[in-house]
Image 1 (cartoon, protein in one colour):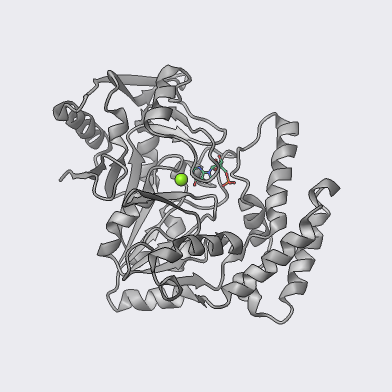
Image 2 (tube, rainbow, N blue to C red):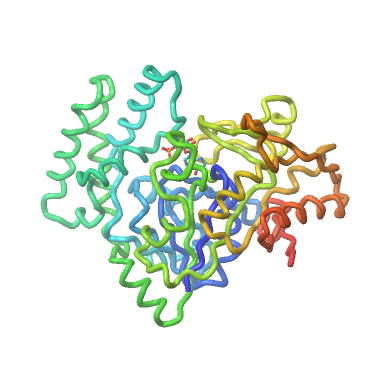
Amino acid sequence: MLDILLGLQFGDEGKGKIIDLLTPEYDYVARFQGGPNAGHTLYLDDNKYVLHQIPSGIFHKKQICVIGNGVILNPLILLNEINKLNHLDLNIENRLIISDKINLILPTHILLDKWNEEQREIETGQKIGSTLKGISPTYKDKYSRNGLRICDIFSFNFKDKVNKLVQIHKQLLPNEYLNNLDNEIEIFIESCNELKKYNIQPIEILLNNELKKGKSILAEGAQGSMLDIDFGTYPYVTSSSTTSGGACVGLGISPIWVNKVIGVFKAYTTRVGNGDFPTELLDEIGEKLVKSGNEFGSTTGRKRRCGWLDLVQLNYTCLINGVTDLIMTKIDVLNDFEEIKLCNKYDKNGIPDYLTFNGWNNNINNRMMYIKFIESELKINISKVSIGTGRNDFINNN
Ligand code: IMP
Ligand code: MG
C-alpha cells in the first residue's frame, strides 16, 4: 500500500519531522519530485539536520529510502549530504536506492537559474524568488528532451554528453557567468563517477513488485501544493507536480495502490519567494511570527513571509489532493499571541475575511477550539498536532 505525505501550503510545513515520525510504520520512504530546493529539517538529540536530496526516513535503520524518477539530482549536494551523516552509521550505501531515470542538475543549470531570474526582474520587475538550485532549467531540459539522466553516467561517452549540453547552455549565458565553469564541470563529472557505487535501478519495477508482496511505501512530497506547477500561484511556483498525482508519476507506481493522502499544514502560513499571499501580515504580528517560528528558509536562509492560516486555500489543496488525514504543525509558535486570526472566506473583492480566536497561553481548551474549528471546516480529521521541534513533541488528536 502507498501512503502519500505532502504539504498543503507553500512548503516548509514541517514535512521532514512528520516523515521521520511515521517512518517506522513503513518499509520504504520515497521522494517523488523536486530537488535540492527542498530543505527538510529534523532535530535529533539537539542536533539539527537539513536534508535536501535524501528522503527524511534515513534516520531509522531498517527502512529503505528511495529517490524517485520525478526528483532531479545534484550529485555534489547528495554526496555532501551523505558525508555529513557519516558519523551516524546509517548504512546509507545499502539503504539508499536511486531511480535510474532521474535527471541531473548540471552547474550550468544553476547559472541559468540565476540568469533567468535576473532577466525576469528586468523584464517584469519581479523575480520568482527561486532557490537558485537550478530547478527550473533542469526540468525544462527534461521536458524538452535534452536532459541528462543518471543512467547516462554509465555510458562510455558521458563526458561528451555533458559537454554537448554545456555548450547549449553557454550560448544562453553572458560571458561573466562562465569564469569558473571548466572547474565546476570537472567536479560535476567526478561526483557523477562517485555515484556509481550507489544502488541505481528502475525503482518503478522494484516498488510495484514490493507492493504486490504486501510491503508499504510512504511517498514524501517536497515544497507544497500552492507551489505546484499546475495548481499553485503560477508563475510563482516551482517546476514540478507537488500534488498527490505527482507521487504516482514521480515513482512509477499505479494509483490503484494509494491508501492515504496525508496533508501537512502549519498552524499559520509562510511563504519564501514572491507571489500571491492573501493573508500575509506586513506588520509587527508578522514579525512576531518570524521570530517565534524561526521562519528562515532552511535552503537559502531567507526570511519567510508570514501570515494567518488561510482555510480557503487549505480547502482547495485538500480537495485537489484528496487528503484523507491532516497533520498540523508548529501550533506552539502561536502560544503567546493574544488573539489568533484565521481566514475562512474572501469577500467579493478577494480580500480575506477573518475570524478571531482567543489566544491560549497554554490554555489547552482555547487551543483545542482552534483545532476543532479547522477540523470542522475542512471536514477531515486532524490526527496529530506538532507542538515543538523534537521527535516526540506531538499530541495525538483522535
Ligand atoms: P525553485 O523551486 O527554486 O524554482 O523556486 C520557486 C519558488 O518555490 C520560490 O518561491 C521558492 O522560494 C519556492 N520553493 C522552492 N522550494 C521550496 C521549499 O522546499 N520550501 C519552500 N519554498 C520553496
Ligand atoms: Mg523547507
